[in-house]
Length: 273
Ligand SMILES: Nc1ncnc2c1ncn2[C@@H]1O[C@H](COP(=O)(O)OP(=O)(O)O)[C@@H](O)[C@H]1O
Ligand SMILES: [Mg+2]
View (spheres, rainbow, N blue to C red):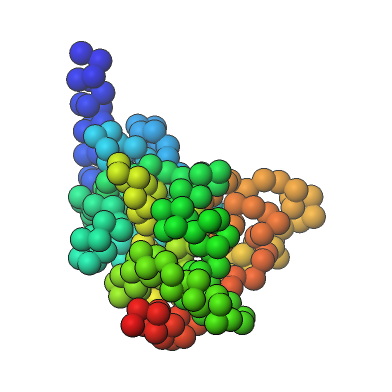
């Protein structure tokens, strides 16, 4: 009986969410906010990034709403990331590197996807050890090398990366799909599937939209630091799983790493040969 009423309530909340998403006369940002509040009241909270928030809807599924309580939330960036994510890349799916997407909301206001096990900072080694790196730092360094963000890459470092074939295959697949591989460095963007394989749960950032999204994020950070009074600077912002660390005041004003898409692409191709 209890179980039945839970299912009914969940289905009802989902219908409400879908209904609100389709209300084209309501401004996009307002719809996102209303949907977020319905989800917050109805489902278990899982995690929040700089632009989107995931809730558990049962049945091993999540709903990811294009809304976040992050200080740098931007509706345009949010729906753009949901749009990219909903254009499922077939090779990445075949390689089981991304979760299954079941449904996409109107105007990309949400996606319903396969729920994967979240990784906290303490369990991030599960990703690096799957790819046979001794430490997460070594995995991070290998990602930097293939992204060509590392200032100097020695022959020895390249050999070290080449020795991790599964890692190179994963990076190459993600790159061929057009995903921004720099986002793979954030452990919060990874989950584990039931077989314990790492799955990239956030594929919103691509080589096409990355520059614009990062620029908007930087602009928000700049405006925030300008607007902050000294007394406000000690206040805690909501904690996010953001790659940009916007849940952390000390990182808030940190300049976002400069990206170089072309060199990133060339390096991955060279490694993939
Ligand atoms: N498929 C999923 N299964 C489980 N948790 C997820 C899934 N997708 C997202 N999450 C959780 O929601 C958080 C925010 O989602 P994410 O896609 O990273 O948003 P953003 O694009 O704002 O960074 C993630 O850090 C993770 O904790
Ligand atoms: Mg994320």
